Image (cartoon, rainbow, N blue to C red; front, side, top):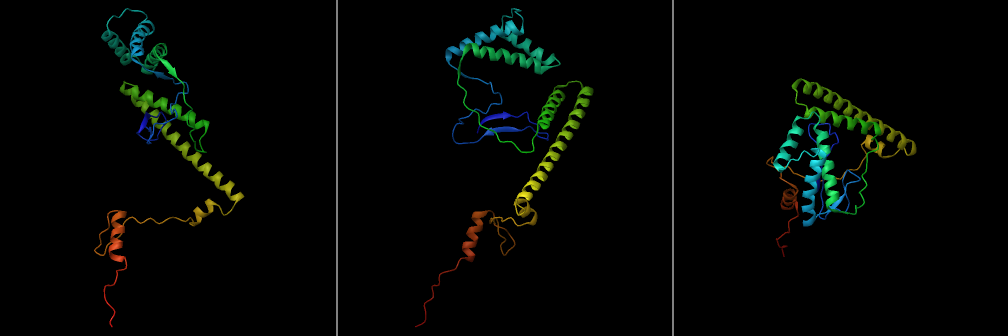
Length: 243
């Protein structure tokens, strides 16, 4: 399992969506959300240059050349800024820009590989995309609010927006299904929608468990097959025909 990431997409629950890739080989396509994300060739010399460039750029861009000599002092100052600033995301974004510039000035970049095409659902729309981004923004604002009264207000606003978003998704799904049924029925009245509604879809029966004469059940498929072979298979007759 590779390429773990926590998605910003709203999951309509109290849990975030975690995406990852499962496979036996290393993925050959870049799954990064950022189209401009670069991959760097990291080596020992580049690491030393990166450390020097990071300190220099941090002093120049974040501390405005305040001449903070020790790394511990710089780290404490950054920590205080993040915890005391009302908009922590802005401070994190500034530091990310410094990291990105330090990487560009220290390492060589690798050619980006083609991205894998992602399939989407037919009922998704631009309106839902906008609502999802706004809902994620409300969630982040609510989570980083420290004041109890303001946090309660923003939590109520987030829950209301989340309810509206989930309702919009259900309506979009229902409308898309009705349009599909109407369209396919006009083309072919004996289509998948008709078979599904009439209960005429063929389903493959899969043996899972079996009730024994004593009322207990077999544990799994393998135990079921063994029980059937032991009790229902025809036995070879060992009796001799009378002469």
